[in-house]
Length: 213
Image (tube, rainbow, N blue to C red; front, side):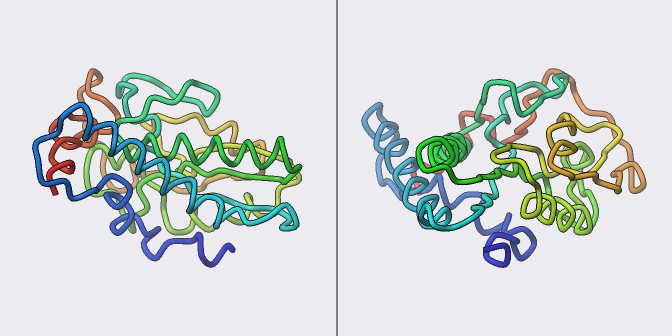
């Protein structure tokens, strides 16, 4: 399972938009928005059940995306205990995925660990990624911690120890994840504290554009 979850390039490029596309031909109406939401959650339910497997499996580990809190502002310091604020339909699907993991833990007694994966790159390429960067080495540390922790269920941000990071690292430390890398080794650029953490993904245009594809 670890092999299937560890993305090639954290599978970020291929999965970033996959959960939010329906290829609708018409301008988004309230009905088409509802259709998109239902289809997104349905795909998440199917893929999460396939990923999580059955109660006979010992520790399903689920890779989620940081975009389930992308509507928080860049001036916020966000922990995994804070309410989800998804920045789009893709983020909504990740909220649903975490809820399914919790369901498996509560109903079937599975140990489920959810990782909110940062920007997995060799080096940060933007001011936003300087806050969300997950180095290749820290990615391995995060997944090893998730697979070996004695915690029964947990949610944590898989992100490097970035000086200007937006996300609290304590929930990761509780499962044994101690990131070592810091984006400031590459660059340190300012960012508007009033912008959403999701950046362009949090704009209305980003979601409606994908409704038309």
